[in-house]
Structure formats: C-alpha cells, structure tokens
Length: 306
Ligand SMILES: [Zn+2]
Image (cartoon, rainbow, N blue to C red):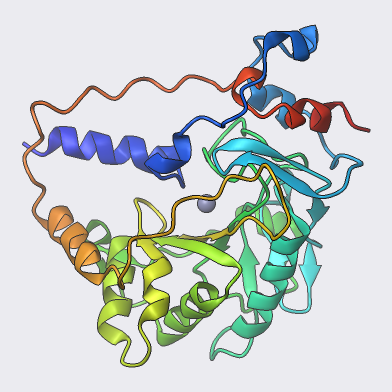
C-alpha cells in the first residue's frame, strides 16, 4: 500500500515545478499552415534548446508557465553584488526583465539576513524560454525562478565551482519537516518573496510551509502564496505574475483564500501516513513532448527572430 502514491509522487517530483492548472492548453493553438516545415512535428524542446541567445524583440511572455515562450529575454548577470547564477553551462539565467529585476531586489534583501550575503540563483529560463530538454515542465515564459536554499556566503565562486557545488536539503522525514539547516533567515527570505506584489506563488516542500505557518506570529496574509509542492527542498521556486500590460500571458488562478496552513498540515499527514491509493484514479497518461502546435503562434516568431 502506498506504493502507487509514492510512484505518483516521484513522477510529480520529476516533472519539476508544475501544478495541474498549468497544463491546460494555451487558448491559441496554431494551425499547421502557420508553422514552418522545419518546425513541424519536432519536439519544441529541441527547437528552443538550440538557441544560445535571446530573440531580438521587445520583451513579452507568450502562453502559459508550462506551455509558452519568451520574446526579448534579458540575461541575469552571472555575478552581482548580492547574487551568483549557478550551473552556468545550462544557460538558463535568462528571463523577462521583470524577473531579473525581482531576483536582484530579493537578493539585496537576502544580504541583510544573518549568514547570507545574497542568493544563489538556479534556473530561470532558456534564452527564448520554451520547453527544456531536461528538468522542468514550467519555467517557459521567463517568469519562474529557482532560488537555492543554501545560504549564499561566498559570491566569488568560479564557473567550475558553480557547476559542482550542491545546494543543501532543508527537509527531514521525506519533506514532512524541516531539518536543522532551516533558519529564521529562510523564513524571512521566503516571506519577502511572497509579500512582493510581483509574485503569484512560491513553491516549497510541505514541511517548510507548515513550519512557517507555526513560526509566523504577525501578519499571515503572505502565507497564502506559499504553496506546498513535491521536491523543492534544495531550492524554492518563485512564480511571478504576468507583468502589467502583457497580452497573451496566461495567469494562473489565484491560490485559494486563506493562509493555506490547514492544507499544508494535511499534506504533511499524507507524507507521514500515506492514504491508500484510490482504485478509481485514472492512470496517469504518459507525457507527450510539446510541439509548436501546442504553443502560441507568437512562439514561431520568437524562434525565427535574429
Ligand atoms: Zn522551479
């Protein structure tokens, strides 16, 4: 018993940062006539994965977090006064300009916390967004940012060090609880991210959400945006709202009202004592690679741009 649940959990964990809602198809599905022959039938992740630079276009996210692309991305500088981008070989330190601003702002706050000199920044998006050859199913519009939970102390790490050092897990008991690495500074940094009007959601493991629910004695409204999710014990994931004035960027539904703490506690109980699998649950369908047919029309131009 519990095995199916566990496998389901693993599949979800491997799928990375996504919520079911994100997988709803983009409203505008393009017809094959508008897709150049060279792009037809190809996994979109190959097309997007082959671009090393942003498109020469005005910045615009197109589509959804898990089904979209990004025009006119900017690159988070590899090193700044209060941050370093990690795993540079992946070339995923590209985002919408608002995302790059956000990371820099949050890193300045992080640097005020004891034991932190800033942030180690994980994946944002590829230079043109879109699906990736490995890892995430979201991070496609330059509005999702992974931030390491390992305190950034040394901001002079070499490229090689940034390939090789690991973040630190904050969990114990499969994510039901935080471990001794978790500090009040983590709480304050996640709180700052969640309190920022630019953010839509923060994903982190259930034990961390539950811990922050217990530790917060002041205003609790920010907790609403912090959502438990599988994995996310080496990093947390910040999802920004569609920037003002962007059309064709599909927002996710707002999180349910309230602080979500009862839900986090339920999540924790399910980790500690997994419910028996539902015999009527539909079999998860194998994931199909997205093609350009699945993405908004504008993504063709994003790929074609110089
Ligand atoms: Zn993520």
